[in-house]
Image 1 (cartoon, rainbow, N blue to C red):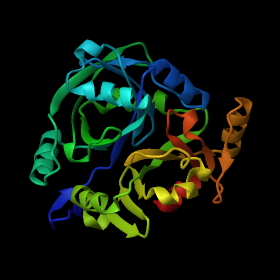
Image 2: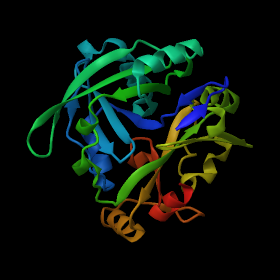
Image 3: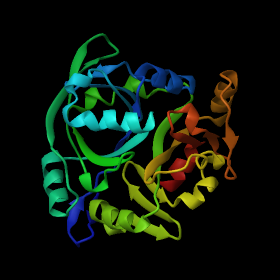
Image 4: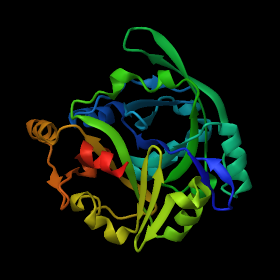
Length: 302
């Protein structure tokens, strides 16, 4: 998708690559998502002291990220600081890069303070058929957005078939995709300017207390804290700031009846929103409020 950025320059837009959920107990976090009916990947270890488990969808994913070896953290000592400050929870929004080096230079030119570019980082992946592949990625964070509880960045996946594994995308709750991520902030103006630069002004719309960015792999829904009680069945507004922070994700599902029955069978409380979505409290998903919508609603948006 070719767009024009905030400065009138054409660029190719990429969307949401993944959401990072930091956790002090990776296996417990994975068990929590599995109880909600998600198929969680096996643990994979990075060379810089962290490990992850993934909840994969066709266009993007949720990354559960923990510390495997604190002595090797290097730049990711910020994960340790985040966990110490918060105990864990939603942390980062990562955008997909076609060329991480080119994205880094562009972000530097636009004053977004890109951090160190980690090139060609590898991690082993045990495939469902028993073979092993090496996933490889390049990534960097944006210092201009970083706070104690929130960060943004870019990631380029060099070996997509070692990440988007079909078997990992089949979920017992019928989830087919992550169609939106909701971020709460008390400074919509700063987000509006940054997103216009990142995605192009044509992708960004503003209405009162809400800023919406449409990307090829999901919507970024940025809202002021005052309207959080209207989102996720009122379940996301109970926890105060600091702001900004990621508060929720919207997922489309194949069959509502199947989802509701699974949650009832597993004694997972849920609420129905005014619009009919099934909402699960953030306490059930490591601080990420979950909104499940029908598959047809996603198709209507597209």
